[in-house]
Image 1 (tube, rainbow, N blue to C red):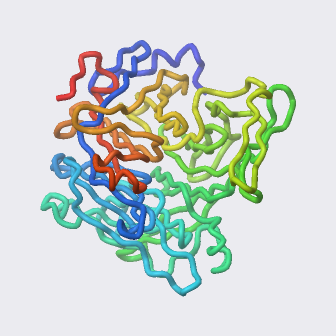
Image 2 (cartoon, rainbow, N blue to C red):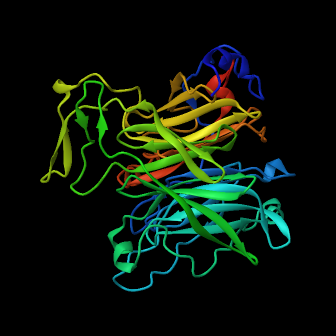
Length: 428
């Protein structure tokens, strides 16, 4: 373990030098681009934005892509101007009584050895069918602005958690996702809906297709001991445990960061393709330790704030999308979405100490991002985003028309990283 006294000396400035060697100052920012609105109703194809990933083209930065899940409506692929370039539908349902395919989270793998070449992959959790779907990203198609994602999933891949179709239909299935590579291969950490279990899956090439196998498993606590000695469990529907969705891996740090929605976010060791060490809670939700009771009539929890033991952290539940603004081998920040009050919290990538927080607020051209779920950020300079690009899900997109406003509407917002950190920022 690195001595605390040495940590500050090891934090390099960011690639765009927007962060000083002292603690950076974060500011509320406006989005500069947004993707088309998605509508979660029959007319809109039950499209619901959830989780984005940013793919950087290896030679033509202007052809880089944002890949976002749309749940029952599959995947959407956008260019750097927010224009849709590809729609990928979910899979057919096996039987009339079986759960429908539903794409929940997406992450990327770079340099995967497939067939006789290295390729980049987009990996998706199919929550409805409890599987991973794998798509090869074609750089030439991306440069031509044509369909860049090609399904390369082995046809008979097994469920990630379920043992049979009946268990799949119960929907305690593949949910959150984080991918990483190391010297031993490419891996995907998959969380289980309504449970605290994480499965570590190795991605395996089979000819020109990709399958996977489970290599490890871990279970986060469903009940936690407070500093007072009392035992606390987050409130939820009967039979549902506090699940994890947002995750991001940092192989250089040997760590997986996992957002347990009603608890906080954890640091979990991942070395040599295995879970290692004891999970450590980095920051808690504000409601951590506060007693609550479930009302079956309203299907909501009543929080008894008058009994707050004062053990809570800084994030307003749920804690959601985790992503890393990575500069160099170890520099940068970890971001976490506080869905409860639409804030993003920043932590030093090495020490994980809190650095500040910000919101994505309404601007002159694009509305803000509320109740954000997934998020992705890159530090690579891109056209229009010279210090890097932050993409966040907007859980309440403002469409501008009364008829559309009455519908459940989501989309993705693009934020110039300079607007988050640079005191001389502008909306141009």
